[in-house]
Amino acid sequence: MHRSKLTDPLHSALCQTSACCRDVAVSLSFSSFSVVATSSVFQESDASHKCLDAYNYDKRMCSAYFLRYKNCRKYWHNIMLERRRNGVKPDMPTAAERQEMIAAIGGTPY
Image 1 (cartoon, one colour):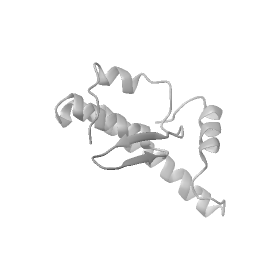
Image 2 (cartoon, helix red, strand yellow):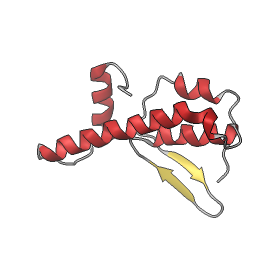
Image 3 (spheres, helix red, strand yellow):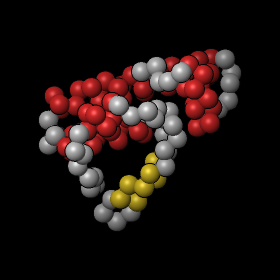
Image 4 (cartoon, one colour):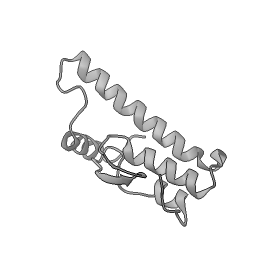
């Protein structure tokens, strides 16, 4: 997969105003097909990959991205478990619901 290098990946990922919960539809190009990714954690995952690309896969340079991704996954997993326990369907909130939840608490909790 080809990704463009970032000029300052730490600044662009950590200082973004958008949340990982925002529904993202980005076309990723692979050798012979493209994938449209829509996920509650896609943005954090993509930022981690871009950081690795920018720093020549030196994982030490991207630990802040990995932590943010891990916290994002943990947060939405807990939301999903809570909704499942309470009998709320679907288990994972829709993109619109995720945006409302983030807005209600004033930003990302992770």
